[in-house]
Structure formats: structure tokens, C-alpha cells
Length: 124
Image (cartoon, rainbow, N blue to C red; front, side, top):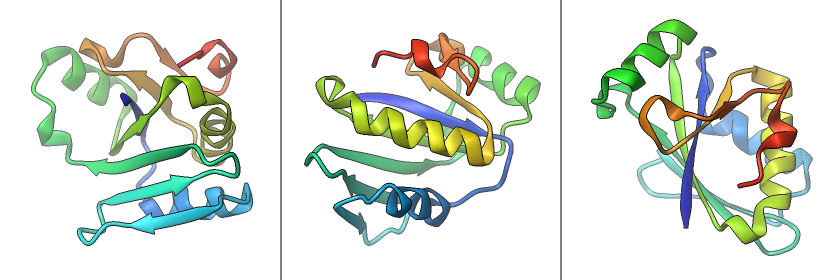
């Protein structure tokens, strides 16, 4: 599985992500015992894991600069299989429409990163 990050200046929760997934007719949504992790199975049986992260878990200066510059308050790590990107991308677009923010890569400074304006360029 690969990882990307959803970074948002709004103080949203996994329940907000779940609500959008339900609106997209997700097949199954499972919360882990910790309540910081949610697994979503989409209608084509592809699965993603959404994990609520603590900002202090990021130690790279580029990451901290991004958080300050974009006023990031919440970060979710999204684990997915790149060959099954279609339904995740639909979900990401709806999340971005509702809450704004960015989709960032698992790299220093989350580069490249995508928002609603350029999310079509994200290929997983």
C-alpha cells in the first residue's frame, strides 16, 4: 500500500470523512478500536485506511513549514493501492469540495500536493 496525506485547516474528524464516504455509497466502513483509524471499502471492493495523525509526528522542517504556511490543523494518512485509485479519487474530490485543504505526497514538504483546482492531475 502507498500513503498520501489529507491536510486541512478545518478541525474535521474521521466522522466527517465517513459521512462523505456514506454519501458515495461506500460498501463498508470500519472504525478501529483506537477510533483514530477507519477502513473504507468502496463499491468496487477497493479499500483505503484513513488514520488521524498528530502534527507532532512530523519532524521534517519542510513539513512544519507547510503546516504553518497553510494553517494546517488536521492531517490524515491515507493508505491505498495505486491500481485502485478511482473511487479514492472520487472520495478525495468530495472531501476537498466540503472542507478544502490539500492532498500531499509522502515526501518532504508533501510535494507535490494537490487541491481542488489540480486534483485531476493526481494519478496515485
